[in-house]
Image (tube, rainbow, N blue to C red; front, side, top):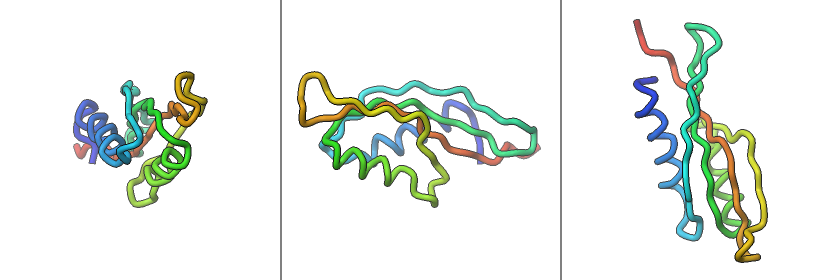
Length: 104
């Protein structure tokens, strides 16, 4: 259930950063505005995450973040080689989640 934007955005970011394996560095986050198209439909909340790590670990982590039971999806993903280390890949993506609107 949706509580407040700050709490929800922090939960989404913490879920991403806490589930990252040690070889992936989650660098920064930008909170996205919450969206809903109708008053009684689910509320979309999310964060933009930037991370760097080996390609195999990064792709496995991104896959795991989208497990259906978490009701999350990755949107607007961008992968690029790291300029300082050719063994690493930079990822920037939006991690979105949907919540039931507050009762009342």
